[in-house]
Length: 217
Image (cartoon, rainbow, N blue to C red; front, side, top):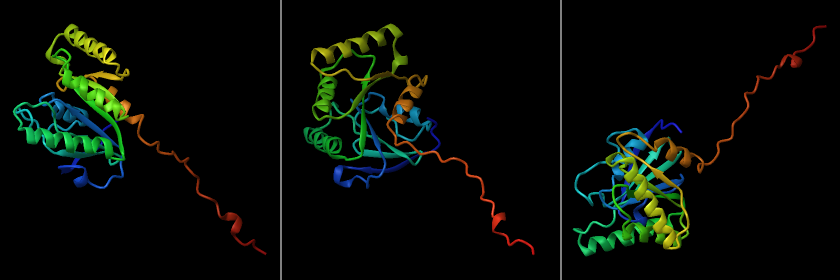
């Protein structure tokens, strides 16, 4: 899939404030500082589409981006930032879970996991919750350029093994890097398979109206 256009549409605090839905939506969510904004910018080819920050927990709104005028990429607030107040963390639980469970045109959830780290219980529990809610989910292992290939592969295998131990169904997984653009084509192609098919019309030849001309007497 080629990204022809990618524009910021709007932000919303909760489900009620979300814009009217007419496009399939693909949500990206993960732990704070997992590299979500950088990944979104890499996927769309727009360096500053999603605002990046070195401060974890900066994204606290649900952000909508219009892609190719055919689908929406949704940037959800990060979870697991310990310095957020309990009230803020509770808001995340309510607002994000409300969007994920009640947004009618949500097509797929991409759960982002930091490939530099061994499996974290919070990430496993979040994916378990997504599946319990019958939400289609894939895993995106981010920052694959920050560690050796062996480390990235080992952590990915450990994570998938933990999912199995938790009784969580196998899910599709991608290994990505915002720096090297690894995994970009795979994710975009995967999204494309879930978009409505556009019917191709055959090139029609103009109808000759010569037969309508009156014959000369």
